[in-house]
Structure formats: C-alpha cells, structure tokens
Image (cartoon, rainbow, N blue to C red; front, side):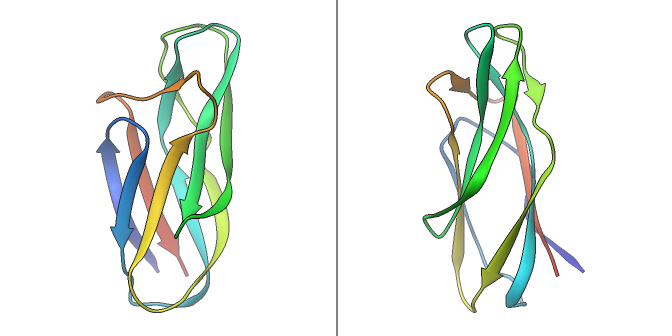
Length: 110
C-alpha cells in the first residue's frame, strides 16, 4: 500500500511537509520533482530530510542555465515511529533553484 504525503506541490525550496501515516516500521519514501540552475554546467538537486535527519541527495547535472529538469525518481529506506513527522526538501547547491513551475511528490510505500 502507498500513502501520499504530497502530490504535485509547487514552490520555492526549502519546503516542509508535515504528515502522519497509519503505519510504522521499516518503509520506503519516494520522491519525484524538478528544479533548475541559473548557471550552465552545474550540479543541482534536492536534499531530503526526515525529522531533521538527512536521508540523502537527489542530484542532476544541468548543461543549460534556466531550464527546468525533472529529477530522477528516488527511493529512500526509512524507519517511522508513530505520530507526526516532517519531510524537508532543500537545495543541495547554491545554484539550485525552484519556483512555482517546479512540483514535488512524496509518498510512502510499505
């Protein structure tokens, strides 16, 4: 079964998504999204945090400046306890940009 945390939510990084799901234990967090770089030949991407713990980065190389690109869909192993949690998305470099034209989806798979 899968549980959406957020679906096609646009905006400027950093973004925070509080959530709770009716399951606990060892699970998988999925992320899809997009971003852009204001410089050519740059690495950009999103860092993913669960309850302020860094899960990992989703990088992308940008040949062109000012062009939105989809990030690779990425999956993170997580362990959830009961209660409220927060996913935070941040840029991994100073050249990472997002705006109202960039969308993020997050979901949990048990």
